[in-house]
Image (cartoon, one colour):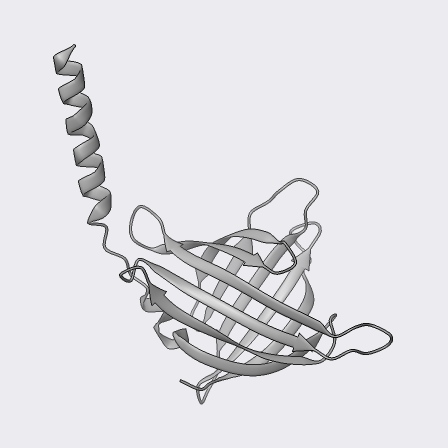
Length: 169
């Protein structure tokens, strides 16, 4: 019995030590870290807002906070949208996952793929829920294009909103 307890404690200590020393690599996000301000349009209408991307928790996660507003139009009230997204690393230290929350009550779990000048976040498949895709594309002069799309079949994505932002800090 004592051997089982000792082995269990040893296994837990090794597991904790291995994961505690995980080296993270947010290099693909370096150009996006900072504060951004922009405008865009889509189904909510014409709007503007700001967001920030910052490393947090001793550089173990990337935290995005976003605020946008869309003016009232066509008998629709003004829309204020706030969200929070956490990009986190897999067991190898690569930022391959994200979780998103907003003031409308949505929670989206994303997988991340990196391309030349783009970062593409695609939601995990879930029954009776559309797929979501969020794409950041770095442009010239510290500009960023952000596109949020939805798909019912996972093949044909329709743009819900798209906009351009300028890095301000």
